[in-house]
Each structure stands twice: as C-alpha cells, then as structure tokens.
Amino acid sequence: AVPDDHVIVLFGATGDLARRKLLPGLFHLAKAGLLPDRYRIVGSAPAQAALSDDEFRKRARESVAEFGRSRPEGKAWQRFEESLSFGAADPEDPGPLLEAVRDAEQALGGSPRRLFHLAVPPAAFASVIELLGATGLADGARVIVEKPFGTDLPSARALNATIHSVFDESRVFRIDHFLGKESVDNILALRFANGLLEPVWNRDHISHVQIDVPEKIGIEGRAQFFEGTGTFRDMIVTHLFQLLGFVAMEPPTTLAAKPLRDEKEKVFQSMRSLDPAHVVRGQYEGYRDEPGVDPRSDTETFVALRVELDNWRWAGVPFYLRSGKSLAEGRHIVTLGFREPALRMFPLTARHRTRTNELVIDFDDPGRIAARFLVKDPGPAMRLSDAEMVFSYAESFNTMHALEGYERLILDAMLGDQSLFTRSDGIERLWEVSTPLLDDPPPVEPYAPGSWGPDGINRLIAPYHWSLPGRR
Ligand code: BG6
Image (cartoon, rainbow, N blue to C red):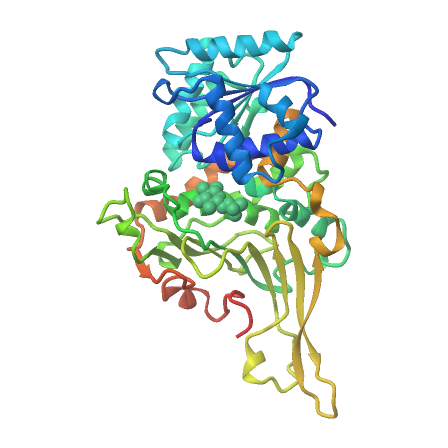
C-alpha cells in the first residue's frame, strides 16, 4: 500500500536523530517508492536553531551522504530535495512553521494528511503538543512521539493527558524503533506461523530467557541527553521491555493492531514490580570525564536486571535483561534457555555442564536464528559436542529491500497502522512496575570499557550463564 499524500513535519530537524536516522530513512522510503505520490517534508526547530530552506536541504544531503544507504544524487535525490523546506517554531512565535506548512499544503493541492514527528528531547514534548493544539495544526493530523515517553509514572501520565487533550489515541504513534526491526517482527512469525516452537514456548520447557543488547559505542557526544536519561530509561523501559512483550505474549486472535497490542499489554500487566536487589547498575570508567558529564554523575550507562511475570505461561521463569554502553560487542540477542532432559544419561564434560539447549534469536539487522543442541562426536566413544542449526536472513533472502526500524514505522504511521507502536496503558504500567527501582536505585558499579559489565552480572544470572560472549 502507498500512503495518502502527506505533509510530514519533523520537529528536531537539526538534531542527532534526524541526521542519523530520520532524513536518511525518509530518503530511503522515497527511493523505494514507498512515500506517497505527492509529499512535502517540513523541518522545524526553535528559532535559535532556524535554518533557511537551502541550509536544511544541504544538511539533509550531508546526513544522507554520511548515514544513508543510497547516495544523495540523481533524479530521486533532486525530487526529494525539492520537497524539503524549513519553518522555525517557538511557543510564542509559531509563525514561520505555520507559513511553511501552508506553503507545503498549497504546493500539493487537495487536502494532504499531516504527520508530525516529534524527534525532540522528552522535556520538549508537551510544549510542542500544546503548540500543535493551539495553532490548529493538529486538526485531523497524526503524531509520532519519540521515546522515552516520560521519565516516571507521574510524568508519563501527565504527558498522556497533554497528548490526549489535543490528539485522540487513534492518531498517536509512540515510536520504539526496535519494534520496526525485521527480525523482531519475525518473532511473531516464528512463534505463531509454525507448529514447531509454540508448544514448548512456556515454563514447562523453558528455564529462563535472556534479552541482551550490549553496545560497543559510548554516549557519542550525547552527554546532555544521556545525563538526564541513563540506560534504564533510554533502553530498558523502552526497547528491552517492548521486546519482552513480543517474546512473552499469548497468541493474539488476529494480527490487527488491537488484539496484538492487547496481548502485549497483558504481559506488562503481569510483570512483577522490579526488585532493586535484582538490578545491577553500572557506569563505564571514564564516563565522568566525558565532556558535558557531571564529574560526580550517578547516571548509569549499564543495567542488568531480572524480571518476573506472574502469569500461567511464565510463572517461575526469570527473564534477564542487559544493556549498556562501551561494552565488548554490539549485539541484539534473545536467548531462550531450555530445561535439561529428565535424566542425564550422557557423561558431560565441564565444557557442557552449563550449556543446555538454547534458541538464540539474533536481531542485528538483518538477523538470524540459531538452535543450539548437543550431538554425538563421530567415533566409537559416546562423547558429546555442541552443535548449531542456523537460519540467516542474509543467506536466505535478498535483504536489499528490507526496511530499517524507523523506515518501517514511519511508513506504518503514514498508513495509520498502530500495530507496532506502544500504547498509553502499557507505557504507564511499565513505569509503574519500575517505580521501586527509580525510587531506590542501587549505587552504580564501575566497569572497564570493552568488558561485559560490572562483576555483579554473573551473580545476577546464576545458576545460568549469559549466552554472550559465546562459548565458554
Ligand atoms: C536508541 C538509544 O533509542 O537506540 C541509543 O537512544 C541506542 O542510545 C540506540 O544506541 C540503539 O539502537 P540500534 O538500533 O542501533 O540498536
């Protein structure tokens, strides 16, 4: 499906997210023929960061050249570039933005849809929403709101109330780009299109689950954002909890937005409040020396924690989550650890003692799935070795046409499909279960850059083991 004609307004157009992901992503959608026949993209920012149309086009060209998958050249680029314009907006003076939107709508003719993308820091969401309401720009429009949505339960509630005073929930698209990743969406196919795995996808067969997203990168000059956010709010309460929702949900009655999101929200309802005793907070050595970071900062750059679900499918099965900056590798992995067989008939060497069967879903783009099990070594003796069955997207498909998370989700928002967006009740519930941790966070433990995190992580997961870094 191709969306209706659109005027897309990008708040935060001069920011890091627009530069790295959104402008390159929009150009990729244009090249792939997935933008509407007729569209305009209006960049916006506060007056002190205002750009002329030409400056905005130049910036877009540079960002596509640096971060895009296709070069900013040829007819496709020319057409995309011509669609770009800029209109600054401040609560006291929305004039330039109003003018830019009006010009864009006139250029398209008819009545194009408006889509606002709020790629701004969380503290700025409310004032932008209020501006959209006060100016009438919000009428009939859809809005994409970035994460993190609030910083705790009261602020998330207040933000939802502000949004709902201007936008009906059916027009709100809270974005979490992990849910647009091809291989995250594939968790639904893997579980519900096959008869192979779902019968064992429960507490009878699975001993524990790991959701592991270590990052090699540090804070990449984002001190201001990061100091006020930290890894728990940046990664856990958002990306990793959403992934947990997909891994743990019951089969929805259909894949339509409502049943799918209902089932995910039920997982969040069944989440037990986080216990600070089962949380490891870390900070990489040298973080306090980064420009813009408070030399006494208590902000965490790493979190590992145990989550428990009080429902019939998962009672007693711990979920271990980990994410952090400046770690040994950048990976995206979900591991299901299976229970041991009832009887151990085979002598296991120390090498195998801890390695039970595992299903590892690797959702690095483009992703792979591996089943790990034990096989007999060839030869007269009964000796076991580790083996792996692997499905790889890159080897099985031409992934050239795959969309990245943001691309997929911006397309879905233009089409009005909310399936892969988060909902107000779910988000509020996630802040609710996080409250004990936010109120009483354990102290940050230092860890060496390039490691897998502070020492406490192995105690946290015992008697199991992190499936990264690979074979022990
Ligand atoms: C963003 C976080 O939402 O996700 C970043 O703000 C993080 O801190 C990024 O690096 C990770 O996304 P991806 O898709 O590169 O794993």
